[in-house]
Amino acid sequence: MVPQHVLVLNASYEPINVCSMRRAVVLLLKEKAEILEHAPRAIRGVVRDFPAPHVIRLVYRVKVPRYEARRMSRRALFARDGFECQYCGSRSKLTVDHVVPRSRGGDSSWVNVVTSCAPCNARKGNSLCHEVQMYPRRKPRPPRADVFVDVAAPRRPEAWSRYLAVA
Image (cartoon, rainbow, N blue to C red; front, side, top):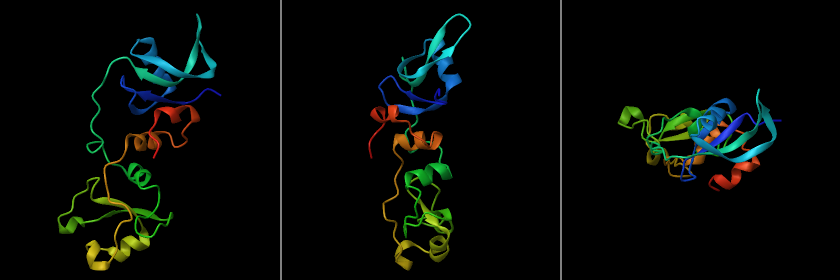
C-alpha cells in the first residue's frame, strides 16, 4: 500500500511537518524537494512511473517558526503531554488546564497549560498549584518538533524513525 502521509524535512534534515502524497509529488515535480525514502510501490503516470515518496527533503532551507510560536491546539497539547493527565496520570476525560488560571492573570501559552483529566481540573478549579497541593508531573514547556508530526500523522511509519528525535 502506498503511504498517504509524507514526512517533510528541511534542507538541514530537521522535520518540518507531514504533507499529503499529492503535495509531496508537486514539490518533487517542481524540483523543490528530493526523495530520501520511498515506498516499494510506484505512482503510475501517463508517461512514466514515479517512486512513491515516504520521506522528502526540501532542497532549500525554509524558515520555520520556533516551536514556542507555533499555533497551540488541544491535540498538540495532549501529544506533548503523552495523552495523560499531568496531575494523576489518567488517560480518560482529558481537558486543558491553565497552571496559573486565566482569571488570575495566566495566559494560554505552552508554558502555562497542561493536560488534565476532568476530575483533576474541577478539583484544582480557580486555584494556584500550591494552594491545592496539585503540581504537574512535568514542567510545561514548548513541544519538540516531532510532536507536530505526531499530531499530523498519529501512526508514525518505521521509515521515519531515523529522521525524528528519539524522546
